[in-house]
Length: 220
Image (tube, rainbow, N blue to C red; front, side):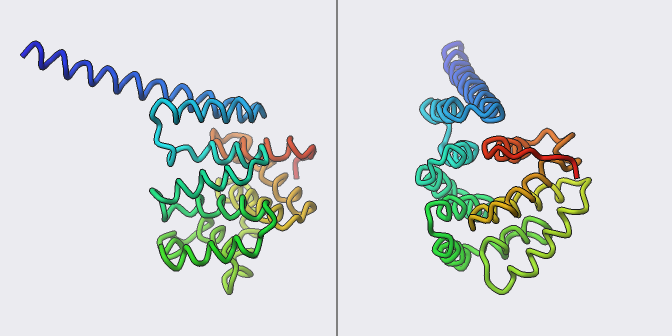
């Protein structure tokens, strides 16, 4: 019994140490990203993978790679995520962004629609901002309505939905090399009420986006 207890205890302790270690690395990688130290952020997320964190959980690594303009590697991260999480719409959106930034905006949308036909991502995404974001990036007959809904939502302020609507409108504009609208909507996100109070990694995404591009975002 003592030997069994010792063996079980060793497994529990090892699992605890692994979880604690990867948690520390995730927090460190997130903090480095928030501070704009992309190289350190990516390094910490890579270390997390090397000590056992499943790579398909490292979506923040994909975002850090995107802002480091390592778009092919970022795309590879999101493709890996989609193998395990095919119906998480954000993974498809970020993959499309990475491919668009490599000069293939329409091709990225075509592949996104093909994937949706296979996996039913839109069908599995409930009504609201997330569904509109996905429809916007996919294109097709739902794009115009999605764009209007997101713009109106972004202007309401005061909620996480208004923040996310503005953020993804800005990212969508950037995917098309529309700098003016990218700045407009990213600054909406940065100045939103949610960004001032929300403890959300994606708030730091909007802030880092603006900072890296040298945009001064004033309160609307």
